[in-house]
Image (cartoon, rainbow, N blue to C red; front, side):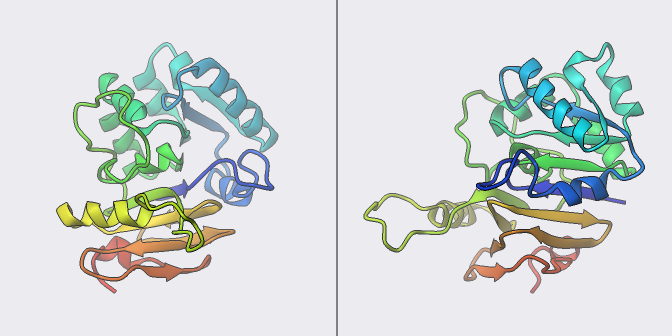
Amino acid sequence: MRDLLLVSSSVVHGYGYLEQCEADVRALFSNRKKILFFPFALKDHDAYAAKVRNRFAELGFELTSIHQTADPATAIKEAQGFFVGGGNTFRLLASMQNAGLLPKLRSRIRAGVPYMGSSAGSNLACPTIMTTNDMPIVFPRNFKALELIPFQLNAHYLDPDPTSKHHGETRETRLREYHEMNELPVLGLREGAQLRVQGDRAQLRGIHGARLFRRGREPVEFAPGSELNFLLADANAE
C-alpha cells in the first residue's frame, strides 16, 4: 500500500521551489487536501513552514506544520498526506526520534497515506540514514529510519568530474566505502530526479536519471521513466 514520492531536491537549477516535480506532487496528493509537514531538518521551523505552506497553497493543498499542532500524535492520525522537507538528515532523524514520531508516521504510511520526502525527507524513507551527504551536527539515537523502501538513497548524487584537478573523495568513492561494510543497494538520485513508489511498483521520474550502486558490482545507469520494481521485490536482483 506504499504511496511515495521521494525527491532528490526541492530546488533545481532553472526551476522554482518544487516546480520540477509539481506534476508528481499533484498526483501523489490528488483528492487529499490536508497535508501534514515536518520541518525538523532545518532550525527555523516557522520560516520553513511558512515557505512550504505558501507553495502548497499554490498547488491547491492545505498544509499544517506538525510543530504548530497541539497534539502531534492526533495530527499524524488525522492527516491525509505527509511531506518531510530537506535540510540536515541527522537533525531530522534525531528530532523525530526524540518526539517519538517515527512509529506513528510509519504506521500511517504503511496503511496507504501518501508520503513525500525531499532530500533529507527522502533519506528518512530508507532503512537507515547511512547514505546521507550531511554532517552529523547532532547525534540521533541510532541510524534507523522509516524503512518504507528496502534499499538506500543518495540524494543530490554528483557524478565524478573527469576534468577536475581535485583529488579528494568523490560521491562514488563514498558509496563504495559504504558497500565495504554494508549490503543494501544505493540509488543515487541526481538533482531533478525523483522516485515514485506505488505498492510494488517503483518508477524513476523527473528531468535527470539515477545511478544504482550494489556491493561487488559496477554501477548501473537508469534514465527517467525506468521501472525499478526489482528494488522493491529483491533489492539485490537484476
